[in-house]
Image (cartoon, rainbow, N blue to C red; front, top):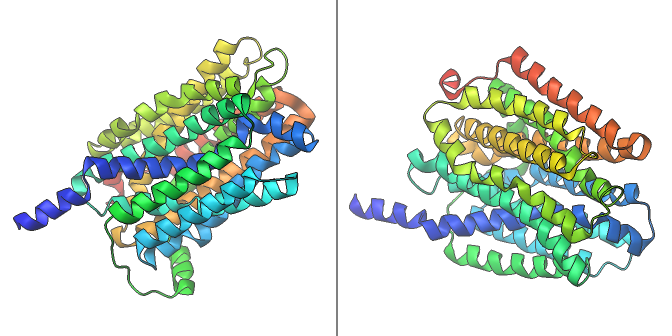
Length: 398
């Protein structure tokens, strides 16, 4: 019994949790390098800024396809090997971006990298099986903090390397780091056997799981709506800050995104709050914060501090809701966590892709004000959905 406990502690040691958090950050963050670089990319390839902004949409839609088609393999193949292979392929996509001679190759590299960067979404549910179930929510919160930190630092580091070297540099660096971390994961992460399941059966079972769990439907739709509202900010950040009255460099744009660190710090705390039953209150709070953030952001062109305040609130809102949603979803069927996560994240990032697409389109025709109206509408919709569906707490699930 003691030996079993010692093995369990060894599997989920603090250094291993840190390694998994770094892997999550690198994989997911790689989808956001292009956001502060859009002006530089557009200039080099001689395309318009709104056209360059569709790189963000490409990253989101390919990530969504990966969630739908690849993440379920986490319940089909040995998880460690699956994670490592996906990370290596994501690194390959990053290197294609680094050597891109034209915008078409850039779109190709972005598509490959984003498709396989879903390695993090196999790793996160797998992490909940490695240690004490009582700590699983806190571990998820820590890995989600690593993931969000990766997104934040991705913009800042990408902007910095673009300013001091070129926009290509971040893709060289990312490709190499992904290879190194994949090697560490291959050595340090425990292996786990997966049941032999036919791929078609896996996909069909996802539709069954979605139909079976009403709370999964509610959480996924709610998450998708909210991420659509937040993706408007992600997609238009470089467009807004590179023009009057700011005229920011790539590095300065990346620095502004660091205000989201407030959301990252909340990650482990949110996990603890979930465990003690405060999920319903925090869910409602996150939705009202989302609406409040867009009311602030509507005045973003007046003063930079107003924009930063709005960004801070919107990051906190997204962190609260997403970590709560994932813990609710993971509690449904432990043996099907990869598939449940795939369903949730597919709908979640479908919302993000929709937000990015419409943000680029609305910006071209109506500018920042039009984007703000869209953000407010999506925020109100999330509150209405929450009220009509009465998204339940874990106690209601059981």
